[in-house]
Structures are given as structure tokens and as C-alpha cells.
Length: 254
Image (tube, rainbow, N blue to C red; front, top):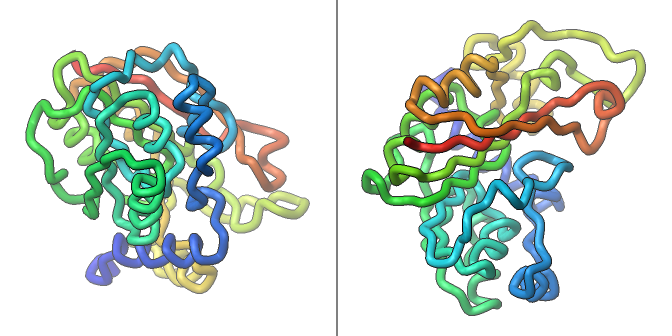
């Protein structure tokens, strides 16, 4: 199954979702951009809870990487706040949105199409901040991502990451009662042909659950220092009423 290049499957799947109106592929409006320039802004790493403002340094002239962060939602805000943004994504449509918003608002952003399961196409010690919304559910090996984040961050650089906690992967359908546990964790369709076929049939992309050892422990093993954390809930489905399904972390490179 790995020979199918699951990341290519995911790239095409996300392009299809965007075509069908996926909420994470709708760029901000001109009005929202102007508000950000005037100091009225919020951004998301997870579905509902805004990232605390005190997590952010002064972004003026900071080199900022939006990792798997295309779509024209967060990066325009960071540009409006004075950052020098670079976005890396593997979805053509997400990157087109970044280009369109930048042209509309007349700011420069470096746009990079790349697969984050490979070595990042950047020099060491380059970025002051990496902003990484929920997306590593689409890759199998998150340790690689944390190691690459550490490599391309400057000393004192900040990583903000949104991640699922694996709970959503227990259920095949979380939209109707009763909730029925149908999957074991970790959920890895590259090692389970039935899971792979179901995801493919439902146009859900090839997704993976990850443990806290991988998500938080992986950042620590890479050399990052954890500074803060919060939890968040789904914005749809029954599970949102019962338990948080996401975490966001603030980490620093020493």
C-alpha cells in the first residue's frame, strides 16, 4: 500500500474537499484582512479555540513558516501583522488560495509545494516561528516532522502545533447514536487493508492516529522545550459534546 504514495492521495483528496466547500479551504475576506492590519485578529491551530495572543512574539519582520498551512486563512493574518511569511503545503488548491489572497492584498509570500514527509526544502536555523495547524493526521511518521521543525527553527524559535489526540479514530461514524468503538488505536491504514479501502471509498484521504508519545514526546525528543498546551473539541459530530479531541502545543527551540 505504501507504494501508492499516500501523500499524493491526500493531496488530491484535499483538493476535492476544497472544490466541495471544505471550511479549511476558504480564504479570509478583504474585510478580515483589513481588520487584522488594524489589530483585530484570531487564528486557529485546532477546530474551535483561538490560539492565545500571548503565545505570539512580536511578528514584525519575523520569518514565519506556515507548515501544511495553505488555504489563505492564517498566513494573510501573519502578513498583516508584519511577518515575512513562507507557506509549505502539498495541496495545489490550498497554495492557489495563498497566491490569490497575496495578490489581492498586495503582499509577498513565498509559496512552496512540498511533501512534509520528506526533508523540508529550507536551510538550517531559518525561521523564527513555525505555525502548524492540525494536519499530521495525514502522515504516518510525525517524528520526522518534529526533527525537521527543530532543524529549520532558529535558536529561540517557536513552534505552535495543532494535533488530534486519536479519539476520533475509534469510531467509523461519530454523527449518530450510539457511538460504537470500531477501531483499535493506533489507526494506521497502511497496515490495515480494510481501513485503507474504507477511507478510499469514503474519500477521506489516508489518515493516521498518533499517540501522545509521538505528538508531545516526539517534540521533546527532537530537542524542543514544551512551554504551554491546551485542548479543543470537534466542531461537529456527537463526540464534541463529550470529550476534547485535539491538543495544541507551544514549544521553543533552545
